Every structure is written in C-alpha cells, then in structure tokens.
Amino acid sequence: MKLIKAFFIILLFFNILFADVKINAPTTFTENEPYIFTIKATGSDVTFPKIENISKEKVQTISTSKSINIVNSSMTRSLIRKYRLFPKEDFTIPSFTFEIDGKKEKTNQIVVKKQKVSKSNFSYADFQIIASKKDVYVGEAFKVKLKFKYLSSLNINNLSISNANFKDFWFKQLKDEKQYQDGDYTVNELTYLMFAQKEGELKIEPFRIDMSIINQSSDPFANFGFIQQNAQIKKVYSNALSINTKALPSNVNLIGNFNIKSTVDKTTINQGDSITYKIKIDGYGNIDDIKDIKLDIKNAQVFENKPKINTKVIDSKYYGEYEKTFSIVPLNSINIGAIKLRYFDNKTKNIITKQSDSFFIKVNEVKKEQKKLYLPTKLDEEKKVVIKEVKTSSIKQNIFFFFLGIVFSFIAIYIYKLILKNRENSKKDSNIVTRIKKSKTKAELIKILAAYIKKDNELDKLIFKLEDVNINIKTVKKDIINIIKQMEKQKGKK
Image (cartoon, rainbow, N blue to C red; front, side):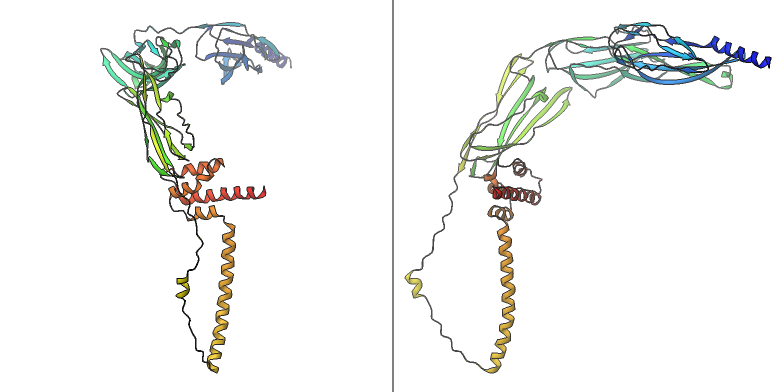
C-alpha cells in the first residue's frame, strides 16, 4: 500500500516538474506576408486559451499536433498549435494563460516589429524587376520585366512567385516568357504590360520567389542505395520600383493613337421606318477607358445596344476596338451629328481631336389612304339584266328538293355558327394585334410598332431586339402581342 502511494506521489511530482508552456514567435515580420508563431504546452492535461484576435487582427489556427516523450522512464505529453495572422503595423503578442494539470501557466509577452523588404543578396540566385519607363502618364502603357536567375547546379524542385502586388496599376501578362543560359546561371524572364491608374509617385513593391531546393544527404544506408532528400525553401526578394505618374490634360482620359468612324444603313426612309447607326473606335492605348457614347437626337426615338470592347496584344502593344450600335426611328428628317474623339498622343505630346462623319436622314411622309363611297351611275343601271325563270315541277322533283333543302339547311347552320365564332375571335384581337400577326418582316413589324415606342420599357426592349439578325421573329411577336394586350386591358380599366 505504501509502495502504491509512493508511486502516485512520484508520478504527480514528475507531472508538475514537466508541466510547461513555451511560445516560439519571431520578433519581426515582413510587410504583406503572413506572420506565424507556435505554442507548445507540455503536461498530461492541457487546456489552451482561445486565441482569436491579436491587436485587432484575426488569428487563424493552421495546425494542431501531439507528441509523447519518455525521459528517464517518465512519459510526458505535448500539444503543439501553430497560428497565423496578417499584421500591418507593429504589434504585441500578449501573455496567454494555460491550465496544465490543474495549474495555471503563462507565456511571456512578445513585441513584434515590422521590417521592410529589401532585395536579396545571394550568390546562388538573383531577382530583379525592370521598368521600360520610369515617367508615364495615367493610362499610358509601359512594360515591367521580371528577371530571375539561379545557379544551374542547384537541384530546384519548384519555383513560385508570391506576393505579386500591382496596387494602383492595371496589368496584363504578355506571352513572351523566356528561359536561357547565362554562364553558370539559368535565367527566367516574364513581362507584364502595365497601366498606371492614378497620378503621383506610385510604388511597385518587391516580388518574392520561393525556391524549393533539394539537398541530398547520405545516411548510414547510403551504401545500400538509400538517399535521403530534404527540400529547403529559400525566399528570394527583388528590388522595388518607383513610377512617376503624371495626370493627363483636362477633359482627356485616353492616351495612345486612335481612329473613329460611323456608318448608317440607310439615308432615306419612310415615316415609321428605322435606321441602324454604328460607331467604331479602334487603336493602340487605354481603349477600356473610353466613356460610353450617347446620342441625343430631337424628333426621334433612339435605342442602343451595350458597347462591345475587344482587346488584344499585338507586338507587345495593347490594341482594342470599341463598337456600339443604335437603332433610330425618326419622326421627321434629321441630322446625326459627328461624334468627336479627343486623346493625348504620347509621342507628339499633343491633344488630338478626330471626328466621325455626320449624316442627313431624309424621312418621306406617308400619306394616309382615303376610302371613298361608291355611288352607282346611270350606266350601271342600264347594264342591269333581267332574268326570267320558267319554273316546272313534279312530285319527284319536289321530294328531291325537299331533302336537298334539309341538307342545305344543316350546311347553312354550320357555316353560320362558324362565322359567329370567327367574329368572336376577331373581336378579341384589336386592330394592332391583327396587324402584328400578319406582319412578315422585321422592318414591317418595327413600322407597325413605331407608335408604341416609349410607352412600355419591356416593349421597347423587344422592339430593339428586332435589329438583331439572329433573333427569332415568331418568338418576339408572341411576347410583343402579350405586352400590347396587357396594355389594352389596363387602358380599358381606366
């Protein structure tokens, strides 16, 4: 009995002796990179505190592991947790309280300072970024080349670019990636096309490449062909870049070299018909920044499609096309004025103004047909022919005509009911609905609906859809008829 008591006393002593908590946390962190720290608590019964925020920054638990150690025949258990946060400024890790085997243990408070990233200086690797221009205008294109080289003798398992940050820049990666040998080094090049989005001294922060280098070390079994491979991650930082960005002249937001043109499908139409007007801008530069073009034409209904902007890189230059289509239904003859395009030419450093063609659209007035009442003339009366009928009859003929009369009576009743039904159906459809149903072409349908433009938003959208070449006119007609019937019902209620 005494031996058992002694055993528990010794076990309790060892538990208290090995009860411990340690924090492994760096005293500095790198801007724009995660900060990671580890806490290890040792004991048979461990309770971790909740660590959710540090200095208003959210803390994430990224891993939890357990380990068992035996020292001098005594067994201890350890619980290890790894945490991560993304700090922006200097901060302090507070003291945390742990409960280990019924006893409270505290960690030390740690002050962590922010350090700026500087270019790495390694003999086995080098990373630099190079700008084609250091002084640019807002929206002006320039190139940034990423050049990374490393000793070819290194056993590289993986290369990955991290923390690429182009804040205040719009960018597009070009396809001209390069890899070549330069003496003892392997060189990789990557190029971006850049556009500054605001004026001022803009900074491109250092890039980081993570190199996974495999170190091969022989173990005692090397003679038997066993090789142990350990991958080591090396972080290689580039230099930073400063780009001086100047504002464009007032009332100008495009820079480059552009052209503008406009077209119409007809210059003479009948009243109620529509024309298609297209505007196209193309060229090299920041075409994505073109302001949407609107038309304001008096005595005309104007419908518009959303503009289409297509871009691509040609010979490392950014090329684009802007195209917008309008459908115009003029009430009278109209003038479509020229559209002006102003941009800053980065070669001549001058503001260039170009304009599209203007058009005069002649609208022919459509005269309404007048129906005249027809009056018979004397000549018509003279042309009357008097027909005399000589009737003869017999009993058989009477019976035959009797049955024939019954048959014709049934046929007449059927035709009469059919006529009534058709009249009822014709009454259901208004004149405009009937005309829509009878229309065969898109142009004819647009002409019929001209009087209904701007009376209903949904109807306007359907009318404008008729300009689409690939549209199914039957489907659109059904939708248009449904909307017009609803409009007529609402009008009837009023």
